[in-house]
Length: 581
Image (cartoon, rainbow, N blue to C red):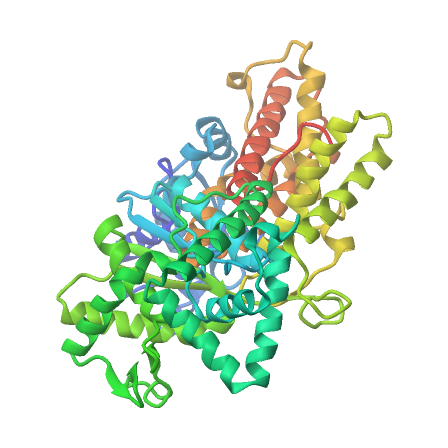
């Protein structure tokens, strides 16, 4: 375990060096340092017991000898526990020094900040054009946005790409339905995307009922991909209408993209993919289609990756390979992160296998490829969340309902607030609650969506964290006209609640590092929740405004740092904070 702040030492190396300096230590010694809970201390070395057993020594006596030989430091308090555990607790002086030194989150980030920034492309959200975004799209959108913010915060160069589904099979069906119904796209009414979805449903039904309809729909797609003028004009208009719909939702969520190329952007590059894969014998023709078999893989030796359909049309795999090559050549991507539903795991595993063989054959360096996948949002019946008529819940409807519910909460608490202020607070609370309910879950798990839980003012929710920020803000409003001591007068933390809060602040960089390493935002959420609960305990037990200036200085400093780290962490998650709730 490495705890690399400027004024601390690498405990593991220190213990090994100390043990090696003792006469009767034989062979390799592994201290087995772990992060201990509050009952034992900050860090605990457990390796003395197995080592002592191996060489036939008394573990407690051996641990005591190591402790006695450790060089003196003001950063740690060292104690012996049980049969031979060595506990290291950060000293009050170290805690005060750390809290004083790292006033800004970027300074405190410590080990999370990268020494060699990478060019990282994050591919997220990626809705299909001609369809409304539904509740399932929120996971990719907000997980991708939070990871993009985290990586940029830690120093990486991040490119956000919204890889739209705008060139696939659904367009053949939709174009067929538009022509069959003789619909003008300028006369679709106030909700054109809903009308396009209705047309798509009709087209799908027709193609299922009639083989000739299916053939016509397939032909419309081939004509589109071949550059048919009429089909291209219809396609462009559909994409414009779709982007207007998407942008309205992204603006609500505070999500941005650098590019929204979509599959169509790469349509002129797919021939290069076919030719190169054939040249290097990576793909083969099978029943008129081009496919890739991975003979070394248990399933993919029989379950191929389809890269060109037998009618000549491209598909997801084709454009994904072309996209990967573009991102490497044009954006110099060193890492590409794809944020999608877990049901696409097979696709990305096959894609990554194919890409590695292709890049190796072309003698190109391939970027690091990561599939950040997530589970399903469930209703309270533990089934995929749907409307009463069985349709997917529209994302815009969900977000508007969150704002409406939050608005009622705000008015109930502050009935005299002006409408403009109610709207501002309701947006921050409602949208923050929806985002945090998702981000606070391990993304690989399904989770049950519950309005009651996500808008609760207690527990691991966004409103609870937002209230903690507002509570600290109220402290500083009360201090505006008070003469308060400067932070240089602060004494080291002494009370249990002072020490616990100061200690939690020092864990900020560890929370960022773990979130970055695992690409799972719930680790950061857990840290922020624990920081908020530790602050609440501190605030309820240790009065901030006291007569002793050194005590008051410390407690004001702890309040200030807590607010800074909470606001910074919530900003990374894309959640707005409020000065007042």
